[in-house]
Amino acid sequence: MTSVSMKELPTMAYPKTLLSIVVSVGALASFLILGSTLLVSQPIGSTVRGYFYGVDNLRKINSVPMLNNSVSESNQNVNVVEDRRKSNPAGLGGHGIEVSSQLGDSGSAEHQLPQSQVKNESSDLKQVELKDLKDEQPHSKLTREEKGNESLEDEPPHSKLTREEKGNESSEDEPPHSMVTQEGKGNKSSSLSDNSKGQENAVVSSNNTQAEQKDAVTSSTSATIYSQENLVDSGCDLYYGKWIYDSTGPLYTNNSCPVLSQMQNCQGNGRPDKDYENWRWKPSQCDLPRFDAKMFLEIMRGKTLAFIGDSVARNQMESMLCILWQVEVPKNRGNKRMQRYYFTSTSTTIVRIWSSWLVHQTPEPFDFAPSGVVKLHLDIPDEGFMEFIKDFDVIVLSSGHWFAKQSVYILNNEIVGGQLWWPDKSRQKKIDNIEAFGISVETILASMVTHPNYTGLTIVRSFSPDHYEGGAWNAGGSCTGKVRPALDGELVENGFTNIMHEKQVTGFNRAMKRKTNKSKLKLMDITKAFSHRLDGHPGPYRSLDPHKITKRGPDGRPPPQDCLHWCMPGPVDTWNELVFEIIKREFGDRQIIPL
Image 1 (cartoon, rainbow, N blue to C red):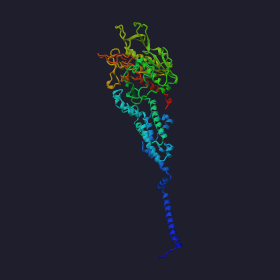
Image 2 (image 1 turned 180 degrees about the horizontal axis):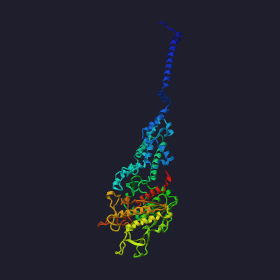
Image 3 (image 1 turned 120 degrees about the vertical axis):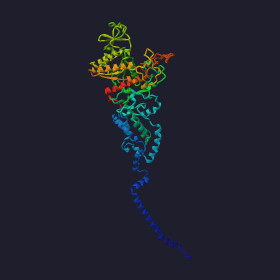
Image 4 (image 1 turned 30 degrees about the vertical axis):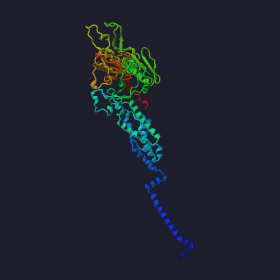
């Protein structure tokens, strides 16, 4: 065996070492060349950069629209709508459907998301998406429209009432939203409800953004409802529609108003049911806004509203005071001649003047009519309030029911008729109480529209229907047990109400033809609509007497009751919502309405 010395080993190993080095260098060079080739490719290069640097900005920015597209598009532009509402409130006014479409028809999503979203990593975005979806759904704020839809389950039967039988059918010329019923304002814009469902599931990338979105949705919805309520189409017929059930409740309670008469305090007097407080009047082609007391006082700044007439006028005036009392307690500045309540915040005054017939009356003997019986001069207005009208900006007139009471009718200084009085049967009556009422309407309205110093707005509230069924008020008539509005097929025709309304409209039209001054005259025609509200009267609940009779006796006779005046709160509050709507339309002060 040949031995090799240690000195020879290094000499033999050098060639192998050099060869290994050369091979390694060559392989490394090949790797570098291949790597350089790969890095110049954009897609792979982007992937490599993402791997090395932890985030690919281009892919992250491009992923934002993809995230937004995975949920309802109605959420993309919430903040933009809020900005538009602040910068151009009039642009949102009165268009619930348009606001809804603005929430869905957005432009580029990148411009709407806060910068914090762009800075977050895509993995964080996914985590926030899952977190916010869990947080948003159980705590999402329902819009007013959605609440209206929810209340469908609570709607009493027969809640969809129409003014006339044909009101149940949609006219070809009727706008699509005119058949809104119990849903409140929910069905007025189906797209708004649909979009609001998407808003509940919105993807929000930060806690601040989540809060901003909720505020924006709530504010936009509120602004929409508010502007809808106060910018109603002036061409809409307010008196053709139906009664709908509204679980929102009344504008006040019997305990929150200290000025309502005890006879109209139905809850305080023990009436057991309350649904009569929750029915709202819904015109067919628009919404009658819920009364906004603060806005009313602002529009009536420095002005005076006077209710003039009989006890039904008092009923309406007290309703108005109860509504306004919820935002401000007025100062009582009345005297024996008139009630006056002054609201200091806006220098607004509410006045009531008693005038049973609205024409001149005297107890003095006249011709063959002795003293003791009231004589009505049908062609002379009641000077008891005419001397004040030049100081009133709005006057609401109420009359008619006192023409059923005993009185003597004088026209052209001649006795021409009487009610419950006509001693000389040989004399022929020229007019009855119905004709007398029509003449009195023309007299008083003609005097107002020709008064040289009166420039105000006169609202003639049409004849208020009573509901004494089975007899007159003093002959067994009753409204006991009525707990909801009557359907069309359930209405009992009241011939006296119908003819009184007809005579009133005739007198109104005749007076309009004689108009010479700059005043305005409007007919608030509530008679047909309120013929359905037989449930809204005190009935037997007229006093606090714990021993009062509230049910029919063994012989079927009803207890004494009031089926003429209206419970408060109750249907009478709708009259003042109508008054307010007329005022807004006529004064044209819409620019002062805050949005």
